Length: 254
Image 1 (tube, rainbow, N blue to C red):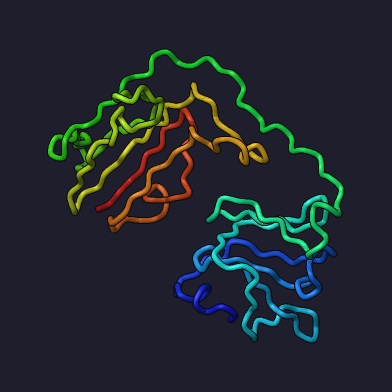
Image 2: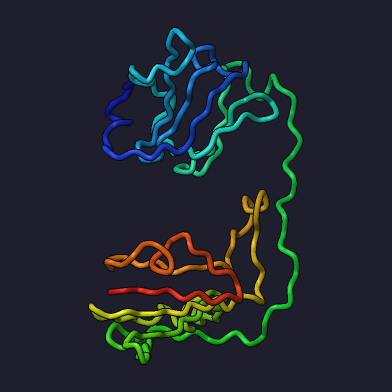
């Protein structure tokens, strides 16, 4: 490919945006071509078309822009291709030289971002415990059941976190930052009840509003790293969704 010193140094890849531009505002060599970006390699490419007009992936792509992390591409109301460059925190406007803003009509200004509706903030938010020291962090409490398994309760809720810099409202497990140390021993079964105690708080943005708001701040789940346990419910299922006010019991067979 073009510019190998810029676009092929990393053996990994992360395809983040794919687009076929069929407008008239880009040079002819880009029109009708498959344009794609890779956030890890930090480049934007396009493929030539084969005799059937399809992307010719048997040949190397051509680099359009290097050192850019594009995550989305869309055609604007002016027919120009816009791309969000996450790496450089910018929006790139791509067009043929001479067909830029001076030769196009002004587009209307964007609409105002939606704001969250007011709500009655709970007045019983507890102060979080923190700064325990590496050897004094409280441990999660398990209780042995009659069948020999263990059970324990973990609560995900709102806390107030106060430091010399001021007061912050955030979320925590069992009113602790960080949460408690959870210890388990091999050859045992553990049942962990996770309670989502955020039913009185705003659910956040959804759909199109999520572009300008906080997405699902009151939804949670629990995910483990390093334990050889089942990845299916009621085990370590990353797709489990615990809605505000709900309780879910995880089962870990160690």
